[in-house]
Length: 408
Image 1 (cartoon, helix red, strand yellow):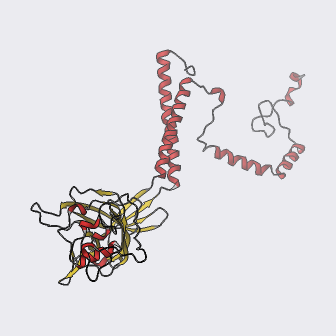
Image 2 (cartoon, helix red, strand yellow):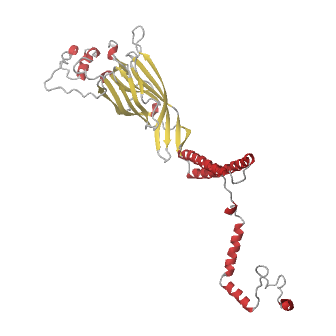
């Protein structure tokens, strides 16, 4: 039948609108099929077709080509390289994370124009074997004159042999302790150590030979000096002296005097500097903090020469601290010459000098983009190197052991 009547059933020639779909499939033409096609267009088929065409164009930019799992081969070599690469990436990530949280400090040098300001000074030191009544603390300017525009105070506290604070002796009612060799018309009762000291000074006597045995003074052995003061910065240099003796005016100048006949065993300039700060204390401390000096002989002159650098510290949050960093050199020499003559004043002399420039230290932390870009570079680079290592190892294993891909 097909052979006899196949002329009108033959497939349409190429290009005929009835020829559609897979080979051998015919598409009906006629009013009904046209109507169906028109109804599909009216229902939004044309919009979906354009969307599909746009997605097909986007697909050309796909660089993440997919491979069917049936074509993937896994090997022991690849698994080993993957585990090692993962451990290596974890270690590198920890290193990068520590670097991210590390704060960098950027220093810059500026000309200091703040000479009209004041200079705060805080001092905390201890003489463990020198009484407060033998120590005089004074602040001098660059010319050696006593600084007049000083605010604040350095307080002296007497210490006992164990380093504890000695309470001032309160005389009992009607009590009258002897002034010993300092007794005279104006000083008949010396109920305190200071009163005994004044009585001996009034007669020009040295009281150090009886200070350790007198009832009024026997408890006090050491001296703790602490406090804060402010001085004008216009002088640019000055000194803080904690020395033996008392200050007298001579020729318009304040000069330090002490009795050279005082026994050396009653005077010991061994000391501990707990802290010295110029301005607000910085977080990293000061070079002199915790310095301890022990005098081989009692009468020793200690000189500390400090070079101050005004510094502004800016933390990562924007807070500012104005301080003065410093470096120092120290000299210790005997106050008594070999001939026995006194050539230096025993004590501590802190001499400071301001530098004409200013340092600015700014803390800067890394932005979050640093850890993100570092992590991406680390993961991508590690995977690339691991892939190269795995390829080389697979070829070497296959060549030396005769194993095909996926076996080892």
